[in-house]
Length: 244
Image (cartoon, rainbow, N blue to C red):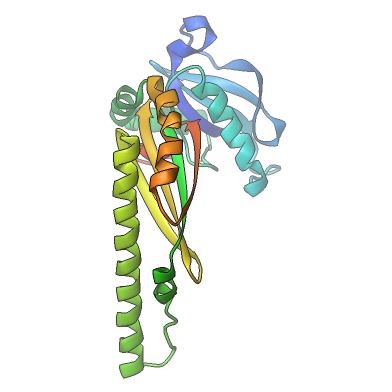
């Protein structure tokens, strides 16, 4: 039997703190394809899973919310390390080996993320100066025109990233997170979307949310939204030895 994996957490947060060596059902949660969700113990950790049959079952985009819901329920009980959507272990041995191989990275991440939460800041920046930073079309031909367009595209990308960096620095000063992850993309002819994930102390969520009104006034030409708290999707270990 294969296992669909949602996240990893500390075993002590489940089953009233009673440690067990056998998988047990987590009541009140349904997973991907309405499957029963179980806690699969491995030492101090527990991998939150549901049974998965590759021959008869598939996962696609409509199951993303099911995955996220299970992770969020576990996050309310303690620190979680979310698995990437669609992570499947083909056997008990594969699951146990994945935990053993990455035990040190998992342990360090749980210690680093304990008592932390992720907040999202989305900024839609509309500025006349961005009109000249439109995506440059690279011609199929070779030669001078191709090289010229390539340089033009690189310059536009650098200018867009520079502007995004300046805004993100301002956002960092306003919200003062512990860590951050930033992505930026052009959304139309005169705007770009900056998506910022902030790692904060869970005790400071209310303080963080209260800074929204002040930040909205100071960030000109921006439409801003704040959401969270979320599990720390953007602050997982960078390199894991994959067995799945």
